[in-house]
Every structure is written in C-alpha cells, then in structure tokens.
Length: 312
Image 1 (tube, rainbow, N blue to C red):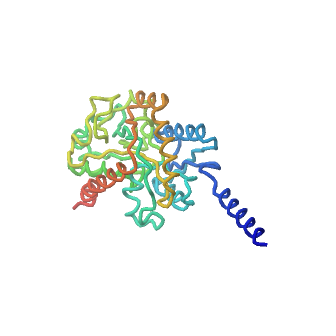
Image 2 (cartoon, one colour; image 1 turned 90 degrees about the vertical axis):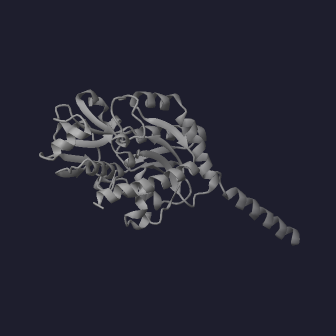
Image 3 (cartoon, one colour; image 1 turned 30 degrees about the vertical axis):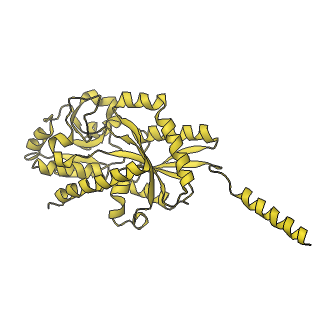
C-alpha cells in the first residue's frame, strides 16, 4: 500500500511539473494604442514577426486607437490582461509618464514594468506649404493677430502639452485645438488643422509640400537637418517622444527576458535599419533599468511643461 501511495505521489508530482508550460505556448498579442501606419506600428510588427519566427507561436499586432483619449484606453486593456506575457503593450512615453497622474483607476498606480525603449520618434511641428510662416518664431508673430487651429493626438498627450508649453514661451496662444487619431497629409490639406504635431512618418508622402517648423527630438532629425529642435527654441523644454515595450508588473522575470531577447534581435535586423535610414527614426534598445531612469527624467521635464501649460 505504501508503494502505491508513493507511486501516486510521484505521478502527481510529475503531472504538476508538466502542467507548468514553458513560455510561450500560445498566441501573443502586441497592443498598440494607435491606428496602423506609424513608426511604432511598423517596428512592433518587425518585433512580432521575429517573436513568431523565434518561438514558433503566432504573434499578432492589435491596434486599439483611443480617439480623443489618446493611448490610455489601449493601455487600460493591457493593464487588465493577465500578467503572463501574452499581452504586451507597445506604448508611447505618455503611458508611463502621464497615465498614473490623470485619474484613470486602472493606470493608478502605474501597473506596468518596462521591457525596454526602442524608438525615438521624428516628431515634428508641420504646416501647409503655403502657410504665411516658416519658423516657430514666425508662427508666434502670425498667431497673435490671426486664427490658427492646432491639431494633436489628444489633450493629455505629451506632444500636445509640449507644443502648448513652447507656444507660451514664445508668447502666443492657438485660437483653437482639435484631437485626431491620425495626423497626416489629409489633416492639413483638408483644412482640419493649420498646424499639427505629428511624426515625419505620417506626413512622409507630402513632406516636400509642407513647412516643418521644428522637431520635438533631442537632436535634429537626419532627413531634415536644417529644422531646429524644440530644445534649441526653448532649452528648458527639451523633450523627445519615445516608444517602448511594457508588460504588467507581475509578469515573471524569465518571460520579460524572452520578450527582450526577441526585441533586441528584431531591432538589429536589416528591416529596422532600413526604416531608420528612410524615416529619420532613432532605433535602439534601452534596457528596463535604463527605461526606468528615462521615465524618471521625463517626469521632471514634464512638470516644467505642465506648469507652463497651467499658466503657473
């Protein structure tokens, strides 16, 4: 009888061990809280393809644009998913820097752990080619006596707040604003906005027919070296817009490591290098620790920006 119980116990133990499957064993989703087509979308698809090739499980990119709510509705869907590495967020700077501060219960306190940061957007301030201003300073002069509508990705988005802060530094206000899921050639051509804060990727098809007033990057964009950065115009407001991979804080460390390994491999691929060369995007890899330091630094700069936006 004792031998029987011992055999049963051993069998149960082996069954329990077998039940703990090695990650990944089922399809994985990369959630992007914006429509398809921008740089984070293209790069995340490169990462997802590499994930599928490396681990042999389906890896899908799911776009969940939030409209005027910006990236936060999509981020909430990742926060509410199981902490098992099967739902991965591809998030812009605003999710970890702003998300925990705006009263969304599912994002407060910050529910995410960075895997790493992989992209600095070539974010720009753009106007139509026939606009009566070619620089931020000329825009400031024009806006003091004329109506200028500013298009952005949402009231709470960092690029919008960054632009408003710089405009305050230059002594002008936009007459009105509007939020869009996408800010592209059609936004300006249709007259929906006079000035937009968007990525070079979204306006690339009509770039030669636009005026680029400034870039919201730490350094000048390689494909438009004559365009000054916001930091050159207002040094204390030097801030860039980046994107990274995030998972729920309770996701096991070995799972995070497997996601990181695939991301690093994908970002060193010929496809990623070609995308960087053609668009001016800065593609790299910052580890989880480096990402946390970047987030802390950006929170401090954003405090200065928000004080200006609030009129303090």
